[in-house]
Image 1 (cartoon, one colour):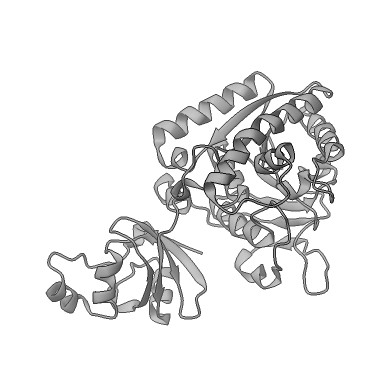
Image 2 (cartoon, helix red, strand yellow):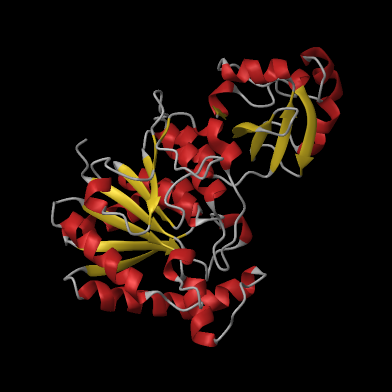
Length: 356
């Protein structure tokens, strides 16, 4: 595999010791391993959480903040501290670092997207390691990634990375016998192995990694979830003790459809078995197949699509508001036209659906 560009993702739990302090030893080991990769002419981008953790350390706060404003305040203090730590430690290995702070809207606006991409490419040309984090201090709830696992995937898509490496304390996805599952071809089949989240300052856990990896797979990007101290030179050559999540055999290429992934879903549309079969056959979702609506959304918003049991089967751009959809759910096209003037035939057109 000719790997030229990779994204490495590090979460807050990896940056913290058991006592709640910044794990400088881990960062030093990470620096050494990244340097070895960069020396082999592979461009590396690091997606790092930890601003809130660092802010809490600075201010002597032991608990994770409960609301956005408190998170933003801690991030304001912590982001500078985090970059200072990275700059100090990475410089020991002759690595120059650059800070990139992103918000979700950048990935939905082509001008902002291209500008951010060119900035990162210029850092690569200069031999600088870009360190990416969410811009917590200005983000509002509608613009939050939810977890940096998703930020890693979106950034990998932006820079056209060949691989994403997510470092983990677990060392990979564990089965019921606590053995690492080596290869995953279909992400949907392994969610049953997900266990709970126990990190103090982290927001994701293995479920988040799998959700993000499902998106990466559909974008055609392989993901490796592995131990925090694995030899990354081996990892980029697919020699890993962790879990390899392989790219889809039919990756999505359309930017328009990929943006559907990136947008924050505003609700859930539950559909019957016939509708599930239809959208999997690349057909549109019709009102007749809708059985239940959850959340408040407007025409043009992104919604998740779920089956009767609540399993998310896809995502798409809806052509009805939630209130309109409650009126027409289960109805045939002719009935819909009588209930809502100039109503579209499809709840979600096939071109605007991504099926998991």
